[in-house]
Image (cartoon, rainbow, N blue to C red; front, side, top):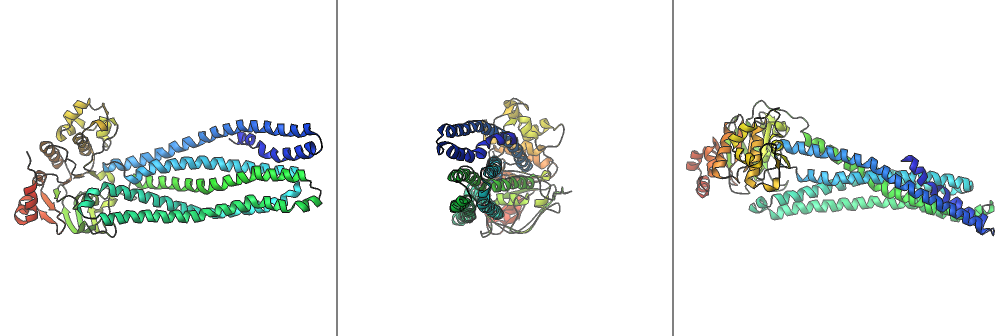
Length: 539
């Protein structure tokens, strides 16, 4: 790349000299053939430089594409590791990070390498060219150029902070919008449209403010370009009388102006625009990808608890910091090996409770512990959450079923028989058959996800309406398999039969939660009795 950059910088080194000699020694001296020869030489150098520029582009690509592939591998690997431990697809922020930040980093690196390399070779060529052409010009040109370059470099830290703030605001807006769209049903059920919409509008306003702040700092680039690029041109013009008195002719002045206007100013402008945007964006994007990927891979200090008893004390959780709580000072105990069903109307906070118990969401107040360990510090392999929309990816059936297990030879056959997915796997062509998620029904995807969770080492399993697309018999078979499996089972119930199978039932009705056995709640809780009466019976 450096070798071809020398070739590409040939015109920057020769352009002022060629113009000055063509005018002074050629056309002004009555020797047009000399002027033409100098211009022809410059044209030849430009032709060779075009070949060099092509080779430089190829060299930049050879540098940037492996960087992009490696960064993308890091981002995807970290995102999928985290998603796999939770038994769910990657979150909206992770998807945005992979799709946006990696591409931003790739483009930023390419632009950065291109403009810094071009500026460095052009600046050196111009200084050398001016020194050879007329050394008396340098004192008028170099000081403002150095001052502009210094001003630009000094503005970079502030520019980096504002650029980072803008990218964080953009990511927060994407995440807030995706969460709003994904929770529309619960938001509507709770009558929280205005509150949630206001929260998203606040995110947009924050991003707008960050964009305006970034624009203000970015304006310093124009000042730096004026001082470092155009001030030398102005000073050179003002110095023409002084230069004339020292024997510098018009041809030499024109040649010096050509160096500045045709080489130095465009190169400095490219540096200001390129580094001012690309270098900052590269640093921020790579930092966001790697920092967030590291955070996604596992909690900072994760622990595998010896037991899987679940303990909630005065837990309060809401959709936003100022929202009305959907869980309000809840106390709950689920012993190791226990089987709890969570019931209640749609939008009442059951999925929020599942996220709080598994550590995916921190409560506003209170404590959540699994085996005495804070829920968000539990090793991801110790618990698994299966949501209503099951996650199945392209690959073999074996890969889909076994990517959470640590066993060298997972008991696929036993798990499929107990969960009830054996017939499905046989119909798909066996464990080594390629799986197309789009060709599966919602119930079939749930069977795949349930079998995967059954094979996982987790001893706390949370099924958040994870059987809602199965018929009652298939649902009973899967829940019974998990109930007989060592560990603790929490089921966000879809049918009354799920509550009947559980040891204990938690009713969430928006006021005071009720906790007890199914029979106890039928007798003591009119809301539960009414809910059970409206529920579709198992057939």
